[in-house]
Image (cartoon, rainbow, N blue to C red; front, side, top):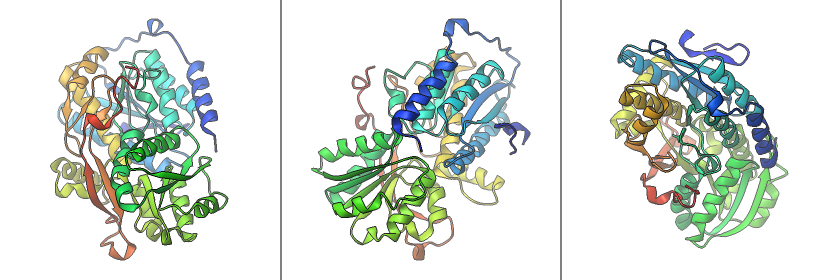
Length: 420
């Protein structure tokens, strides 16, 4: 996999929440057009092109590169099975640099210059909104593989919007249901100050109301913070039973390492609602005992055949190591999209939308489906606990799955609440 000018052809190989959202709106507006003005002819014999904007550079880069690797596996499997009547799929990866404006430009280029049939990707709550804005304005189906609550709401949702990833409401809710009854009711939050962090906190608070939690501290930090020493004393002074660390990527790694160094584990339970496999590998013993939620952990192969099949394929091309959680989103997102194409027997957008709305699919973790009103993928959330370093059998053996919160529309926000 090689890059040039932020572009990758896989077939040939500290902003505030307000600032980020403002940038997303500006980037999307800069490339906004009427869907009635946009029409690209695509011949039946052309390849099926899937644009894939993700932040290959920046603090989420390790997860983004995994998503691209795993998305290519889904494309390869589709092609090996004959494609769509011999029509092969092609993945076009672009670096959105974790910037909404950049993502909007890359998405516009993918649609208008590269003439992609579909868009999949992004790895930020705010960035995906910019991608969605550009795609829906042009009537192009977008499959998001990053957590967001807002993308399901009426202000951002369109019939072309699909959300393969879990969302913060379902993730935080599942983790809260497991943690709050067991670990205590005095709860503090350390959150990245943008949409993703705020949505996770909202999900925890909503679930926490059912368990009588008391919020004793809520401390915000900018994205890509390296030094958390200015934020941690306020949390320690609040004496919480539980600290919910609502951030992502290197922010998660740095905050957990520094909280551990400050001795937080002596008096409170550390919780990371999106507990990341790649960062756990990098963080080692600092992650001992941390509890969180995940869309996937490779040891599910012991009980789920589709997980084993996915893992086996990934290992063959990646020196025997298993795939990551966010990598699996790339596989499932592109895989579900191509399953919809196959079911529709066409790349026509309306036909693929109808096919996806009735699709039952099992790519890597058990059966999933898209709720009709908001196209949210209904799926299980896995509650995981980081093993003590002394208990790790090999370098990939880092979590125990301690609970499965089964996929259920009842744990989602209602369609009416979303304005749909």
